Amino acid sequence: MRQVKVAIIGHGHLGKWHTQKAQALETCELVAIVEPFNQEQVKEMYPGVKVVSKIDEVMDDIEAVVIVTPTSTHFELVEQCLKEGKHVFCEKPLCSTFEQAQSLEPLIKNLKLQVGHSERCHQAWDEVAPRIKDIKGPRTFKINRFAPFKGRATDVDVVQDLMIHDIDLMLFLLGSQPQAVRSIGHKIRTDKWDHVTSHFLFENGDQAIITSGRNHTKEVRELEVMSADGCIHVDLFTNKISFGTNTQFDDESYVKTHDYEKRDHLYIEQEQFYHSILNDVPEMVTYDDGKKAVYYVSKVLQSLVSGSEIDV
Image (cartoon, rainbow, N blue to C red):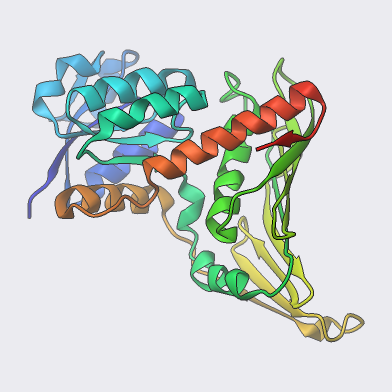
């Protein structure tokens, strides 16, 4: 079996997990880890794998990179690797601004550029996505994503850190683009937005209300879809799906709940990335998907600053 020669760029909190997945996959040959700090420790963890300070040192030895570094570094690294003719998997967000994302398009050519919107990997969507598409009439789409303050990713606001996951899910599951957004937010633990609610409006009458916060007592990740046909609730933290019809609201028996299988999202993402390279098929999350998420993040931030509804 042919393997893709890969370098992991970044061996921090998430980079450690990505490195483990790369080693476990039969379609990946982990050639190098790019990590300027704690190199001796990393070398002990991965004997036989080169550990270097800069990607330039191993560019000639690899076909692809997995970028797991702070958001502020994404654009420069993605641009450099594409220019060198390397396939790129970049953790979300693709880059910091929409203008940066646009400038990458001419560089992609016949290369693969996959973005790490890992929330798409939930098994729940195999069942839920078709039901959402079959709903007649306007849908109200609601996502809450709350997390305790962890002291990580404070170089970006909660919109780029957490909400971007759910903006991507909104686009993926509803299958249409919003017309306008109005957002409100608070700065709590950092000098950036730490708690934000965004209300997206769609031409067909759909609405999406997304709330993200990183200063909570416990993890909450839940999605609801409500319509005249009934309601759907997905708990992404406990892996439970609930369906309810609108026939009887005074009896809990109208709600049916079951568990869904938990998946290894990082493993699936990398597996699909190497599959797209080896078989020349589309990536699981494409450049266009990543660019759209960055675009709507920019509109949320614009609304937060202006305090008004923004056409998108």
